[in-house]
Image (tube, rainbow, N blue to C red):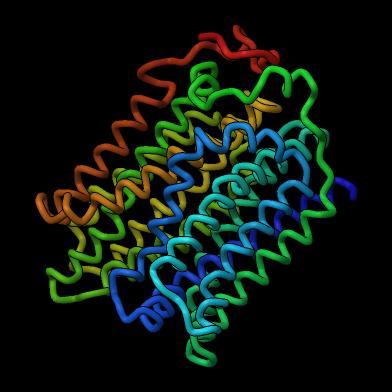
Amino acid sequence: MNPRRAIAAMLTTTFVTWLGQRATAVALPLVALAETGSAWTTGLVGGAVGLPMLTSPWWARGLRQRLTTGRALAGVLAVQVLGLLVVPVGAAVGAVGPLHLATAGLITGAATALSGPGQRALLADICDGAGPGVAARMLAWQDFAHRSTMILAPPLAGWAITVGGPFRLLWAEAAGVALGAALLLAVRGTAAPRAEVAAGAPALRHVLARHPEVRRAVTMAGVGGLTWFAFTLGLAILGAETGRPGLLVSAGMTGYGAGSLAGALLAPMLVPRLPPLATMATGWILLGATFAALPAVTSSLVLIAALAAVGGFAMPLGIAALNRLITTRTDGAERRAAFAAESLVHDGAVSIGLLAGGAVIGLAGAGPTLVVAGAAQAAVGLLAGPWLLPVPDPAQRRTRPLVGPAPR
């Protein structure tokens, strides 16, 4: 398969798998509630998904270095399909309980912890031979494919549930991931060099220590993930407190989704021309400012949507800038480890934030929580950006690390 077809196959895989995942996010709680009759089980799969991600630095370190071909990643997606089938098969035979939900979450979580970073690393590796800047652009298009499902999946899921109930969506997600696995089978990659295999998989912390710009960008991603709950839970609670339950968070999510889709559409053209660390830091400062301003405009749904759209527009540019840093500063085993570190820090921080977010808002209030969360994002953008604490000149150090054990 030539590089263009390989890139198209990988972008299509991203779209179909995320479309199914976002659609199932609507259906799965309904299935869990219908099958178990207990409200607490509705979040069991989501909670179980996070455990493999948070523990992946230990169990996934060696595995991720084997995911250098489409065939290897297709095998990971095949395991994910098995996890996705646990609940619909159990429902078909009339036996879905907490154990089935937790098992499905653990299997799919483990597969996702490997496949997400692995697909980004393989896409970047394929694009390396196509010219400078191609990897950053294609990763930005991959993010666009991912973000487009934010707009398409919820109404599609609502229609499907209305027509045929939630169970068919669970089968559809498994079929979508299976299709993605089939597409990846034809994508060629390159086996890890013997020197990399002999040196062993680099630890995530060592990779971040060797690349200060990447470390700063990953830190910003972590703070952004940790404070995300203030936007979703905060607006939901503010709406309930002001007598408009659901309206504020709907306006905010709609504006954020539209803005992020616009930003993702422009990111492939803009990010290769902009300084990556400054671009990401500016996006985080802008998002922090919108968070802090939201409590002051709760009387207007239009203003909430507009502010959220501004923050949403900045995010794809920041993420594309992070991907550009990783693709230009690392390669091989370090690149795979860097993408894994970004996923671990961001997704782990989101899980922690959502877990503790309700208690934080209960103690401090939704409005003050949004303001503090916004200030935290703006502060990390200022500190991690290249202005207050300059990073070493990339020309004065290696940008392509030699293969070998990381210094201790």
